Length: 158
Image 1 (cartoon, rainbow, N blue to C red):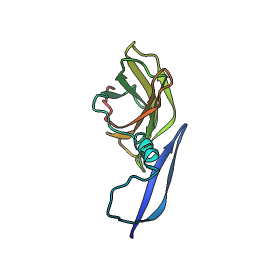
Image 2 (tube, rainbow, N blue to C red):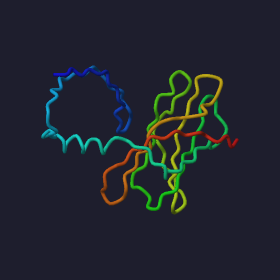
Image 3 (cartoon, one colour):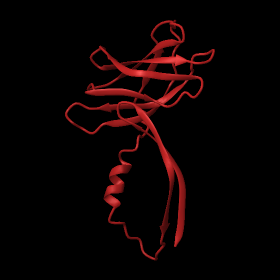
Image 4 (cartoon, rainbow, N blue to C red):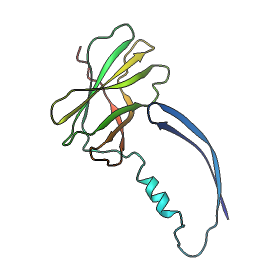
């Protein structure tokens, strides 16, 4: 027998994001033969749902306009062959420096483009140069939603 222990944390998002975590442990019995668990299909199904980077997703992030006090709208845009029925951005925490607050606004865009607006609030003297999070899309036609980790680097247009 081999004991396995880990501290885990995650971010669970639907309309907003909630952090979760805890300690887990299990005992693994190492045998002489390779035999998949009866739960292998379930595990494989969940593995397919883990957000994975998409090198073909070319995002553009830019400040829409000058700041109003400590708030500023950020536009997130990308090309899409077939527009998703759902598109959203779920940010990671900005810590003590900034937060990406409120609901995501989906904007009218060109035929092959998706455009979102998020409001960024800064707590310090500078606007963030990088914002990490997940782009979540759901294709038209009832397919499963897809989540992709992204790092936005806002262009300073004003």
